Length: 439
Image (tube, rainbow, N blue to C red):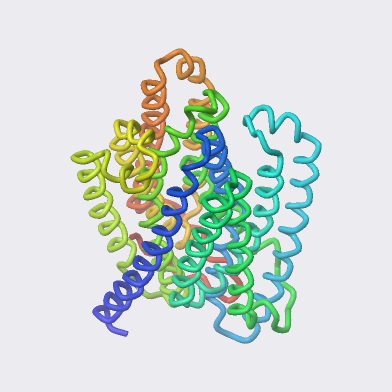
């Protein structure tokens, strides 16, 4: 295709993914309208476990990326056989990893329930089961993403959101369930989309297998996993810290504003989903592409507009999302802080995915250093958080996110445009070793 046709295809596919992400995100957001009708203490537990699930996604996020990369580069029959073998081994490896986590959770269940202020243990066990689905699901999504099957990638997001919303309506609104009930609805939704994704990608994981050079494969997946872990950790860790430090009756107010800020990262993720396999394919074929620059510019424009709107009318998104629970409207003072502090993290996520797609793994240790500094800051400032007035403390937590998000963006930008950065050539079997051009 010509350069113009490439851009048209990118915007067409990004438009569909944006629409699908928007609809899926809308249903996911609407979940909180009935869910917020449960007692604030239970709603705070639900918000906290949702962020726990985001952290549980970290190992599988790297797998989705590397499977997408290997699928996009699987051109020959031998490469496709290696892909099938790889996916099956990953399923077993994630099952074993989950089993170890399940045993550790069972042993430490008392400490976890007390520390995280969980009233109903069923919420913990349902979250654990969802964890297994969340480890398998991104592998299947990686197949669809690498095949550039954006049609079904989008539909799966819509189905996931719709089924979860419908389940919460029934279990929480009609039957009076609490956090465990809402999580049960999420588990059912995961079951539906996991089964659908497995059927759609069956040709990639049920085909004849061929041994893989695992040392080369691990050289790819480990830095990918660690690189993506930095931004994912920074997006989710704050809610867990807040749940631990503050009274369970008020943590839901922080989480309500956080839903608005984190939505920015979620909705702009559609651009990254379209961008990544296109960059991988262009690297495999030694072609130039400007999709990363387009994705970055679009994300910056959308994020800035969202920040301006939330600054002018900070209560508006809360009044829409929590129409039946006006007690959460008081969190509006936190909304502008959340959106503006999440914006640099959103931009950094685009640059990080671009770097990882091109095999520029030298940035990974520095990204991890920023994430570790962020985690240390949350722990070391815990006393200051608890000594301040509640909303002042919440702003201090959000400002910590903002400072380290800006630092993460600066690191990602440096390695993106610093032309002397060493490049790790693609090691996905059959991907070749073409030069990696700058963004």
